[in-house]
Image (cartoon, rainbow, N blue to C red; front, side, top):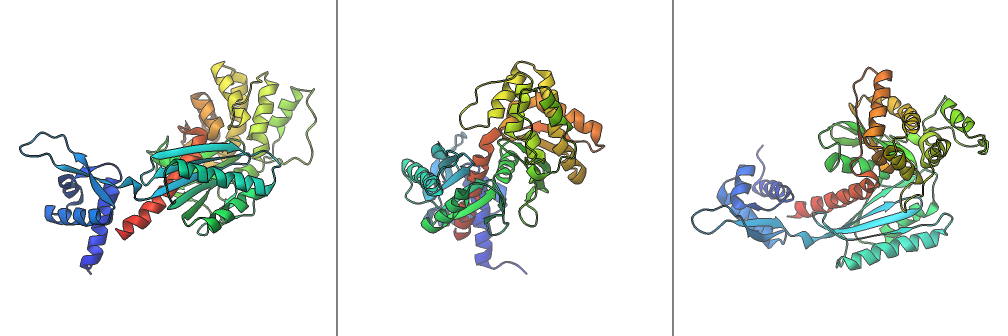
Length: 398
């Protein structure tokens, strides 16, 4: 059954807006890309202009007889969006226009043990100040990357140990702001960014192994995130590590260090989270000053790569491959991205070592790459989510 004229018009409008999202086009270019007649394109461009969604942004520079064709582009200020990267000890925010061009950005540390009310107030003040700096009156959509289990469909943060203020921030944002809130697990937002902007742009299936303050994974299958039934897919920090020999050997090499706490978790986080990597570095004689707003381990790994400290990198790869091999054995994604600040810092030196160890453990061929975006992937992914939400609603209205 053919679509009604109004439905066909809506489909054509949306297709045109999606094309213009990637840059200005002439009416002729829109006609060629959509297959619509020039008169139909002229009518829909006029309608979208009257709706305040597109405007003339210039003229093309193709030499021809007569005047140059007008270029049409989306009205970027039709809506403003924001993104938040909510970490255990910090918050970062950006405010952007409808197409994701950043207009203001800021970050603030959140001290361990800070009262929940103060942490929430500091986060909201940060967002308010950035919104004002960007010249935005309101925010249409806000994307948030947050540690923990996020219930698919509802965006509710639940069932994950962590600072109480994370949940309170989400509650306060929902209460105080009229904009749409798009909440996603931080590692998932990072995977979206790597898929659309980073090192996995050519892949429809890959796994992102997050190596930052903590550890985790995100799975992209068939071009879409796989979140799991409860939002818990990829929680590699809880992956059991039956063989604690790696950590025990490191402690044996540093006998002056405190004995391990028997109550400490034995999962992958205890093997490859930032504190464990810093400890591994110390055992290899690598002690460096950390950089603000990044896991201390990232500086250790950068120093090891720069100084060619191969034994440390070999030991780190031995740890990382414990989780990497588990992901490959179950999912066979074909590509593994070492993400987060540590994965980015390790570069080819770490990625190559992990690839060699995977090849020795699994018959499934797996490309191993390092993150192009590092820790910024969370904020970039949250911003993409906010832009997508705003565009989806406004483009449907158009």
